[in-house]
Image 1 (tube, rainbow, N blue to C red):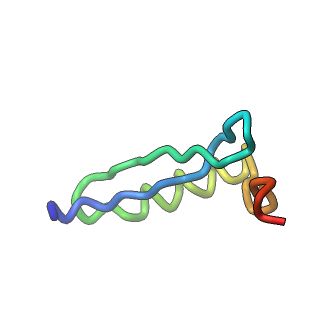
Image 2 (spheres, rainbow, N blue to C red):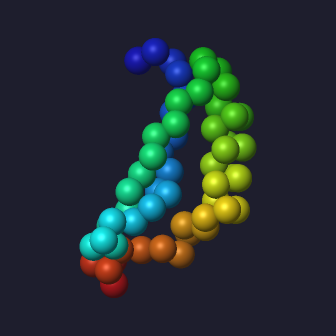
Length: 56
């Protein structure tokens, strides 16, 4: 509603294996900062191959 870009990233998992997301919000029109942050966090803690146990 405010026009501020936001992103939620799966940075942790609960004890039961479900993803826990963290939301980040940037200044109006500053999506690039969120993309850079997401790339840095993905490099530090890759999540592409993590799935909850109920996924299988």
